[in-house]
Length: 251
Ligand SMILES: Nc1ncnc2c1ncn2[C@@H]1O[C@H](COP(=O)(O)OP(=O)(O)OP(=O)(O)O)[C@@H](O)[C@H]1O
Image 1: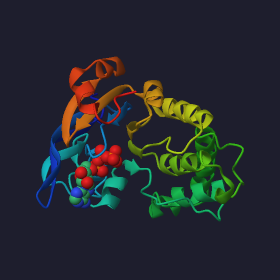
Image 2: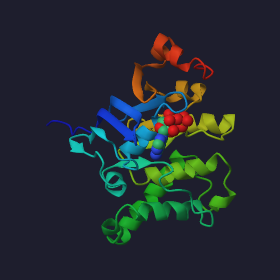
Image 3: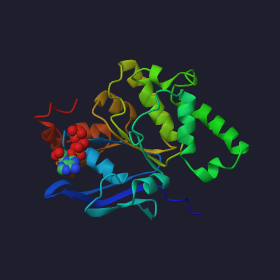
C-alpha cells in the first residue's frame, strides 16, 4: 500500500504588500520528519514565509500543500487543525498555571469532540503529557508555575504545548533566542529527538545550533530562494557568502 504523503510543498509562493514584493516565486519541498532551517539576512522574508504557511499572511501568488491537501490562504485555525503548528501562535504560556495545567489547556484545544470522550481519553492525555514533558526537559517541573520557569524553560513549555497536539509540521521562530549555552545545547537535543516524528521548519541565526540540528538548510535573500543543501554546501556557496556580506557573514 502506498504510504500517505505528508511532505510540505511550497510552489511559486509570493506576497506583495501594496507594491513591495516581500516574498517572490519561492519554492521548496520539506520531507515529512525533516528538520529544515531557514537562513537569510534581516528582511530576507523568512518570517513572512512562515506567516504564509500558517495562514497569518495571505499570499498573492503560488500554492502550499501538505501532502495532497492544499492549505494556501486557508484561515489559520483550519491550517492548525490540518496539522501545522507554530510556536508563538499561542502568544504565551499561562503564567499563573502549572506546567501540567498549561499542557492540559493545550491538549483540550485539540478537539472538543475528543475532549468529550470521557475518562479513557483523559488517561491517555495524562500519559501523553508525561511523555511530552520528558521530551522537553520538563519532567521535574510538572507542578511548577509557568511564571517560575527560567528563560530557557518557558520556550520548552511553549514547544511542549505545541507538540502535545501532534502537529505534522512545526514552525519555529528562533527557538534559542535568549537562551544560555546550556539551554541551547538541551534545545538541540529536544529538536533532534523530534526529528522523524514531526516536520520542523526553524528560522535560526545561531550557526552553532544550526550545525547541531539541520538536516538541510534553505537560504532566502531579498524574498527569493537563494540556495539549498547541507550545511557544508551552504557554507561554501559563493552566492550565500555574497548575500551575507554586509550583514556580518555566515558564522
Ligand atoms: N505586513 C507588511 N507590510 C509591509 N511590509 C512588510 C510586512 N511584513 C513584512 N514586510 C517587509 O517584508 C520584508 C521581509 O520581512 P521578514 O520579517 O519576513 O524578514 P525576515 O527574513 O524574517 O527578517 P528578520 O530576520 O529580520 O526577522 C521586510 O522588508 C519587511 O519590512
